Image (cartoon, rainbow, N blue to C red; front, side, top):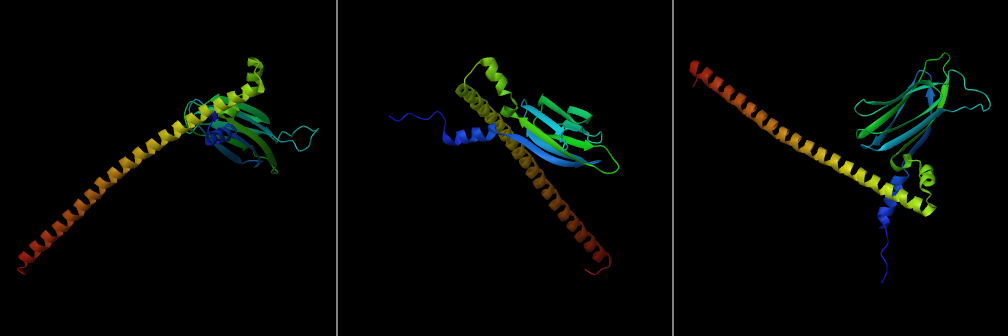
Length: 214
């Protein structure tokens, strides 16, 4: 008898794909400008972000002109993090609502113009958890730690799929309601057109009868 594998191969690929969901990027920001990055996060998911202005002259402090203002908000406008005129910082929170969360970076006006390089790492879900701390606290070996990561990843996939399914149901209901309203609107438009045509025929008939043309 051939033993069954613990994980199906496609599921394992999905787990590995979702468990590596990390947004890491470096971008340039001109003084007086603003750049925003969005991340789709579902309800109750943990998210962690770190940012810093890159110092291209190591050994020398960054000038005062190399500072940014950072604001992280949800799709509904809730403010999760704000830092004014900083060179580095971090944020961490549990999302209280599903949807696109936006991190905006703004640089103050400066004359002459300067170009800032910002390094930004945004982790959500399983990647947002500090697994080194988990290993130290639980005193677990490497294999157990990887299993814990896979279990957490599977839970994240389940939550993500549930969110996608709920969004699909909402979209389907919206389409159904829209189609129903369009049907009644088309029916009303046809009724109005026929009524106007009938009134025009009645008016012409009355006009010709008065002129004794018919």
